[in-house]
Image (cartoon, rainbow, N blue to C red; front, top):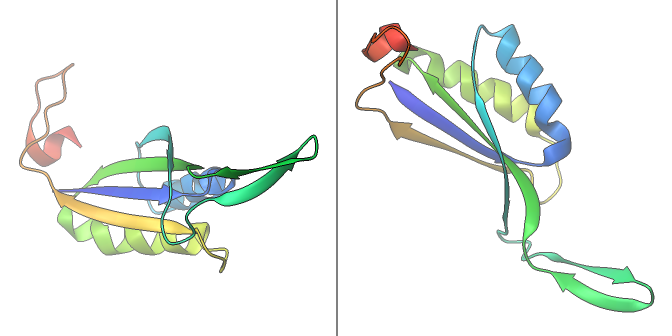
Amino acid sequence: MKLVEAIVKPFKLEEIKDALLEIGIQGMTVSEVKGFGRQKGHKETYRGQEYTIEFVPKVKIEVAVKDAQVPRVIEAIMTAAKTGSIGDGKIFVRELSDVVRIRTGETGELAL
């Protein structure tokens, strides 16, 4: 089992959600996060004052999946999230040692 984490632009969330639902992913966790990568923030002007926004708003999507689903999940996220401009985001894949469904007590892949 794997945990696929994607850090993406917030306005892409609906497209990514729809792409994941289309390939049969039934659940995900979404968090609003801030960060920066190579772009190192950006400058904005407010009331004539220029200031630097160092941490850019992003959305973090977490999806727990079976090993065999990982390539399709990555492809779906990449296709839906890509704008072709800097700051499109990153995808991380982590190993999950176990999952437990609290309501039923199911464990492992049955809990997904």
